[in-house]
Amino acid sequence: MGQLCGRCMQLLRDFVAFVQRMSSDLVHSIKECLTLISKCSCLKQNSSKARQLYKPILQPHERVTAQEFLQHIETGFEMSPLGKDPLEALRTLAFSENPGLQQSAALYYLHMSEHMNVPLPVEHLEPFYALLRSADLEVQQISSLSLVNFLLEGNIDKELVVQMGLLEPILDLLESEDPTVQCNSCACTMTLAVSESNREAIGAAQGVTPLLSLANSYDPRVQQNAVGAILNLTQSEKIQQVLCKEGALPVLALLLESPDSEVQYYSCAALSNVAANVQHHKAMLRPGNGFLLRTLISLLSSSVDKQVSSQACVCLRNLATSADIQAEMVAEDVLPKLRSLLASGSEGVRRASIALLWILSQHPRNQDTLACAELLQSLGILLSAHKTDPVIVGHTACIIKNLSLSKNRWRIIESPCVEGLLQTMHSTDVQEDSLHYVTSCLAELAKQEGAMLRMVQWMDEPLTKCLVRLAGHLEHTEASFQAASIIQHMIGHEKMMLLLKRHIGEIQVYLKNFLTHREIRFQQLGISTFCRLREDPEFSSAFRKSQMAKLLEQVRQQTEETQELLRAAICHEDS
Image 1 (cartoon, rainbow, N blue to C red):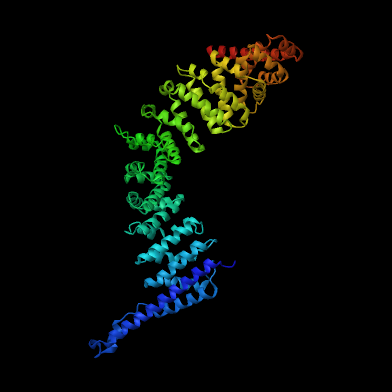
Image 2: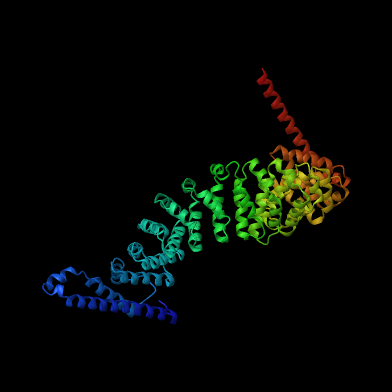
C-alpha cells in the first residue's frame, strides 16, 4: 500500500478529531443531563426508579465500538476494505440509532469512495442499507453521495447493489424533500439503470413515477440526474411501455425547450429511443399536434448545442417512417437547417444530418424538393471535404442516387456532386460498403447522357485505373459489377478510349471472368462491353490474340444447350 499524501493525512486527522470531539461532547452532554435530573426534587424520593426511566443515547457497546474504530483509524488507516473486526465495528456504527455514530460511518464511506481504487467487497454493502434508511438528513446526504461515487468509479457491481436490497431505500430517497438527497438518489438510479436487469427491477419497484416528478424539479442538478435516469430506462422496450403509460412523453417533449443543454440532450435522446419503436409514434405524433416535430426541428438551429442538434436529427430520423411525417418535416422548412448542419465542425452532427436527409430522399414525394441547387451544392462540397468518411460518402451517394430519379435530375449534372463522387473512389477502401453505394450511384448516373458526359470530363488516368482495378475485384460482387457498368457506358468517347487503351490487359482479364461468371447479368455485361470495345482496332487486335472469340463461342454453345433444355421443359409442361 502506498504512502498517503499530506492532504489525505490532514483529511484523516480532521476526521478523527471530528469523531473524538463528537464523542467527547456527547458524553459531556449526557453527564450534564444526568446531573440536572438527579438534582431535581421530584426524583429524590425514589432515585432507583428514576434511573430506570432514562435510556442512554449512546449504548455501552457502541461507545466501545466507536473507540475501537477510532483506534483502528489512528493506528493504521489504509485506502482499502476493512478487516473483519473493524468492519464489524463499522457495521455497529451504521446500524446504531445514534445519528452521530451513523454520521461517522457515513463519513468513513465517503472518504473511502473518494480515494479507494479497488472493488468494494460485498460485505461492505450491508451497512449502506442502514445508512440510507437513517432518519438523519446528513447521514442520508453523505451515504447516498458515497454510493454514487462508488458506482461511478466502478468499485461496486451495479447488479449486486440491487441484489443486496439497496434499490428500495435508494428509490425511497427520491421522495425526500432535500435537493441534495434527491440529486444523489437520482444519480444512483441513473447509474444502476445502465444494466438491463436493473432497469426491469426499477420499473417493477415503481421507480418511474418519482423520476418523472423530479424531471420537473427547479434544482438543475436534480433535473439533470432524473432525466438522465429516464434516458437509461428508455433503453428497455418494456420500461418504454411503463414510461408512456405514466405520461413521460409530454414531460420529455416540454423538456426539449429547457435552457439547460444537458437536460435537452437527455430528453431528446430518451425520445429517440422511444421513437425507435414504431408502436409509440401514434402517441408521440398525435393528429393535429405538431409540437414535437416543430420543437425537434427548432433544435437543428446553429445556436443550439451541437450534441442536442445531432440527437434531434436521430429522433426525427426514427420518426420519419411514413411519407406523411416526412412531408410534414419538409413543410416545416427542415432543409435549410440540415444544410447548415452539413457544414458543422462536428463529425457526429454531420453524420446525423446526412442520415436524416437520406431517409427524406427515399420517398418520391420529397425528391423534387430535395433536388434543389442549394442542397446539391452542399452535398458536393461535403463529399470533397470528407471523402475519407465512409458514413458521409455512403449516405451522400445514396441521396444522389435517389434524387437522380426526380424530374430535377439535371441539377445533379450541374452540381459538384459528380466530381465529388468520382474523387471519393481514390480514398475509399474497396472493402467498405460506401464504395458499393458510390459505384451504384455513378452507374445509375452514367445511364443519362448528360451525366455520363460530365463523368468523362472528370476522368483521368488514376480514376480510370481505379475503375478497371475495381471491376476486376470479383470478390466484391456489387462494386465490381457497377464499376464495369460505368466503364461500359463511357466506351465510345475518344478521351475515354485513350485512357482505357492503357489497361487493355487488365480489361481482358475481367471480361474473361465476366463471361464465365455464374450470374447471367455478368455474362451479358461482359458481352456488351466486348462488342463495344471490339469496334476499336487496338482492342480488336488484342482480343484476337487472346482467343477471346473462342471463349465467346463456348458461352454461345452453353447458351444454346440451356435454350434446348428450356424448350424441352416447356414443351413437356404444355403436353
